Length: 250
Ligand SMILES: Nc1ncnc2c1ncn2[C@@H]1O[C@H](COP(=O)(O)OP(=O)(O)OP(=O)(O)O)[C@@H](O)[C@H]1O
Ligand SMILES: NC(=O)c1ccc[n+]([C@@H]2O[C@H](COP(=O)(O)O)[C@@H](O)[C@H]2O)c1
Image (cartoon, rainbow, N blue to C red; front, side):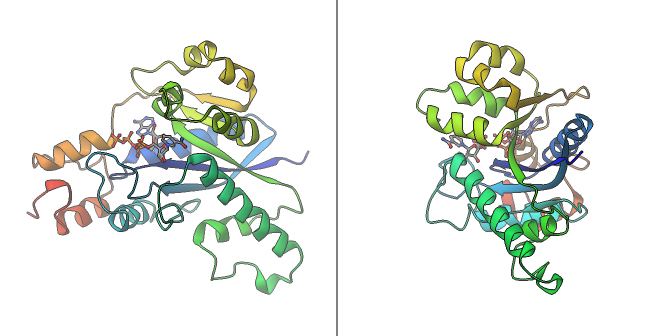
């Protein structure tokens, strides 16, 4: 049986990236691969543009460097700085569409080229990673990977367009990781639009619950408390060397 190839894309602030952001990818890949008809072949982290007016958001140049450092040991998860390099903030539907189109065109180029052209160094690493796989004309689908809090934000008035939610879930699909204080199953049940597309929503239970969040990491850094084992050592070093989040180099 030919498996549908999946690329998981997580959007967010990554301010800074924590171990939980990477764990989300591992949990989702395991879960989706075990379902049978799918094979997860790549992961993409797309940090949000500086214009996304969020409290304490540091410059995207720093956030992208931090994500790259956090991903140093991962073979399959890669940074995409495309959102950060746009003129302004990009709605998530467009971010998914951009990455889907880019993958489609990279794969169709590969199918028409000799092997020398594959793994073209001009392409970003997230594209090159996907080009390693023999897709033989089989479509690759980009799905949105998120925590249950992002799913819940779909119901915040004025935050998401209903048509965007339909496209994100209907055309791409969602992989949702449970998070303390949220009940994604109930949330899907209570929403007509989510229920309509519920077979395109994978809800993945994090049984080893923890409440690591970037907010708490920033708070600890500000207070001079250790964040070791919650965030990669290379990320901590960079944060301290650049005195980010009110941390002192000590
Ligand atoms: N502990 C966690 N469990 C499940 N999902 C998480 C967790 N931490 C982050 N995520 C998910 O990672 C994605 C990117 O998150 P984001 O960068 O906004 O992190 P955050 O920790 O929620 O940030 P902040 O505390 O600054 O709001 C979101 O979909 C979010 O739900
Ligand atoms: N309408 C939309 O497309 C929409 C609305 C709110 C948040 N988002 C995205 O969700 C992510 C949320 O990040 P935070 O949880 O850090 O706020 C960001 O990547 C942001 O661009 C998208």
